[in-house]
Image (cartoon, rainbow, N blue to C red; front, side, top):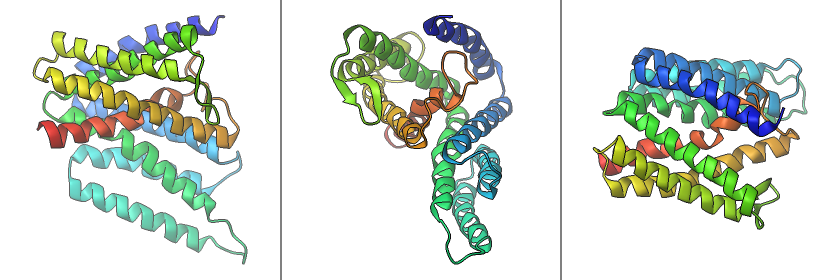
Length: 268
């Protein structure tokens, strides 16, 4: 089957389910969904950065990846900070207790710490956004920002792309595709503001579209760097035509915290 057709089939199936969860699901249902997404993405991360053998680091990371979204759901900043600090301390202490030879590799600890900060802490900002004023609209705004740009980048890059953007990390990305991504995100954000989210000013929508598209592209490149370093093409195969879940979340992982703190400091 043509890979482009596979992408559209996945989108047609996934989009209504995602809409139902966001629009009709309670805050508890949405948080449970984020927990599931986080654990799936973290499992894919484990498979990329560790081998298939048993590893305590993989299990410890999964436990923390489960706990963090639950803590974010409380909305207690003090508790979130405490979990962040004690997660780091616990990982370091547990690593220390496992040292049994004079020669040991601390890189495994670094992979866990990176994974915990990169996936559960970043993704859990969706829970904070959902709990904020107009939270449902903000969630849809982020999705429109990410995927309107992604679709524009795909077709502009495919038809007009010539100059490579960052070939050492992602050979398929082009400067022309990135310009299309930025234009697509800005257009999508403005249209969403005009028709659905009038409480948000047009200026903020345009700024978020511009900056969010760039930050999302950087998130995409960072995930590509992890894959390239690990020697894999996709983070997984759970999504037909799209690869792994982390391959679809890469830009959202960066966009969600950016939009949350932009809203918190510049709009609220």
